[in-house]
Length: 243
Image 1 (cartoon, rainbow, N blue to C red):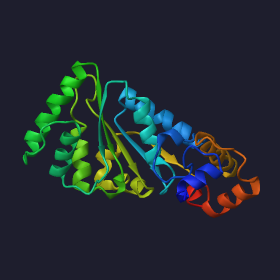
Image 2 (cartoon, rainbow, N blue to C red):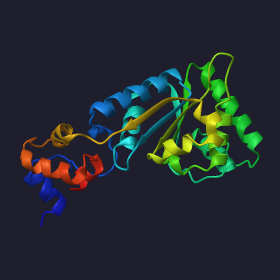
Image 3 (tube, rainbow, N blue to C red):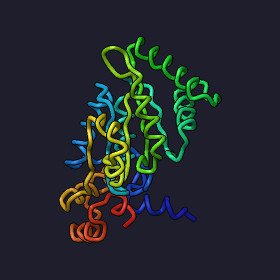
Image 4 (tube, helix red, strand yellow):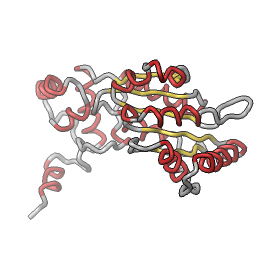
């Protein structure tokens, strides 16, 4: 008996499942907002524009966008520390950063951890490279951890920052950054970008794009069927996939 998944793919002549929920950059669809957001992130990552904050509703594609960004810059001599779980103390943040960069990370002294990180960043810079920290679900960061990130942004040479920090979060992140007690951090956010859901026309293109990437017929769904998807998902890609 053919397993259900293979039967589904064989019936529709698909090489892959086109509507999986995993953030696979191969399936990235660049609608207007996503294309502009990707361009902003790419510029920030390569030029070092201080803090960058990218917000969007749950399921709008922030993580997929960043994974595509990492794939695009994999040959750019950029060291990346990607923090998936932001529920950390300031010390745990430093330990996680160092571990992600492949540095000693067991120390409990913030000074020792910061000194180790600074030496690495200077060496990376001397080698013509860059270092980027990406924090997902950043709306959940405690004030003390955000302050620690701000202090890390002080690691610099006479002419430029040694580390680029990208914050990804739900719309609540904008409210966090606008708090009066975090105004020093807010002033360092050079680029803010909000990912809106797809509009109706983009949703049609999105569905056809994913079918095409999976090797299938773009016309499997009638236009009216995609309209129903849009009406029930409001153009949020993850919900489009679920439906």
